[in-house]
Image (cartoon, rainbow, N blue to C red; front, side, top):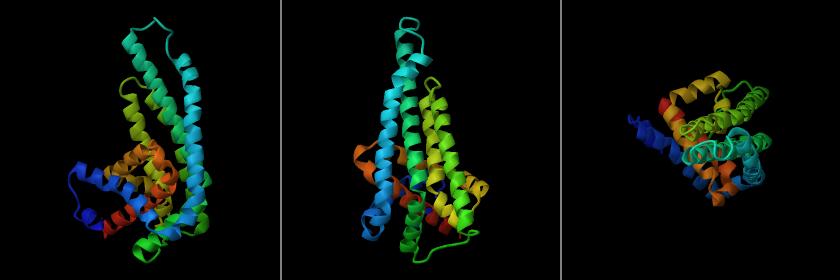
Length: 247
């Protein structure tokens, strides 16, 4: 994997693929290392419960939101009415999933940080620590969590735009999800909030590829159990590979 990134792929497709690959790589890395399982168990259970709860909340709220935001039957052409209704349902369900995942990441943050540390130690043999200490890392983690929580209503509003809304909402969700999942590793490498945003700007394609693939996994029922810990492992591997490519 490092060899692929060190080759400095020039095409957008290859850079997107380099980021996307780290999602299945995270699942494989976690499954092949039983010593990581105790750290992954509680975050996995939280994610399964809260992501499912967020989806059910969106499913329950969607009819009410549709009635509030769309004209009544017969006031629009059937095709346009169906498109608007579908857009509202997608927006509501996506926002519910994002909210459930945000809460799961927030509640599981301490264990997920330990999981990221152990992943780096197992993957590279050493643990990089160039931050300003545990208190600073905790503050940065809270800022990242607040950023992701604030993204849920933005995802909803973007997804409401007819026709292009679901695509815009998915892109924004992928960006913020990738930002949040890489937070523990990037903070441990000494990057403050603004520097982490700049890092994702530099590696926008890799970050987006990782985030979009993570969103796809989010809606796969059989993958939900290992969802959050595997994505944190994958995000840590992504940061490590890109950091090595820099040097």
